[in-house]
Image (cartoon, rainbow, N blue to C red; front, side):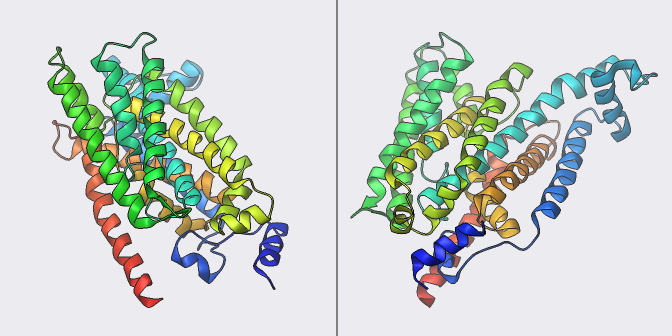
Length: 376
C-alpha cells in the first residue's frame, strides 16, 4: 500500500497519525491509555491540586473549610447556611489565592497547547515557545511598551505588544532554521538560542537606560515568571484566548495530523501547507504572547508537557489537545504551589521551578534523540 493510500485509510477511520520525530516512522502512536480514563483521571488530579493550592500557604486553611468558602461564594447561604470561618480566611481563599490558581491553570494549559501545536507544524519534538525564543520575544515586546510608557490601553496594550514580539521572533527564528526548504533541529535550536540571547540583551539595555528604577523589578518578573500579580480582571483575556485558540486548533486537528506525516503527504491530501502553517504560527504567537503578558516567561512547559500528553493518548490532535489543557493546568498549579511554599514565607519565581524540572527533561530528550540517530 502506498504512503498516500495509508494516510487516506487512516483518515477514513479517524485514527491517530504518527508522532513527530524519529519515532514517527514506526507507525501510528495511539498512547497508552483510553481518552475517557485519561480525562477523568486528570480532572480529579486538577481538582485535588486546586484544593491543595487554595488551602496551603502562609496562612493555612482547612481543606473542608476551603471548599465551603468557595461554595458559599457561589451559592450563598443556600449552599452553606452556617459560615464558620473568619473574614480574613474568606478573603485569602476567594480573593487572593483563587485568582492566582486559576491564572496558573490558564497559563499552563495555554503553553502546553501552544507547544504541542508548534512541535507538530515544525515536526520537531524539541521545539517549544521558550527554547526557540518566542517567549523571550513576547517579554521584550511587553518591556518595550513599559519602558517607553506606551500603556495607553492598559493590559490590552501589553497583550498586543507581547503578541507582536512573539510573532516577529517566531518568524525570524523559523527563517534562520529553514535550510533548503526544511527546518532542521540544530538550526532551530541554535537560532532560537541566538535570537533569545539578543532579546535578553535588548531587554537588559532597556532596563539599564530606564528613567524609572522600579522597572528593574518588573523586568525580573517578565524574565522568571510568576502569578503573584493575579487579579480577577486579568483572567478574562487569557481565558478567552485559550478557549478560542483551542476551538480553532481542534477544528483543524486533521490538518495538524497530516503535517506530522510530512509536507508532501499533507499537500497531496489537499492541505495548503504554507498557508496553514502561517496561520498556525499566528495562533501560537497569540497564545504565547497573552500568557507572557500576564505571567512573564515560564520556560519548558510548552516543550516538556506535549511529550507527556503524547505518552498518555497518542499524537492525534483531536484527542491530544483537550488532554494538553488538563496536563498543563495540573503542572503549573503544582509548580506555583511549590514556588510559594518551599521557602515559605518567602516566594521564588515559578519559572525557576519549571526550569529545574524542564532542564533535565530537555537533556534527556537530546540524549534520546541522539541515540535514535545513531541507531538508524
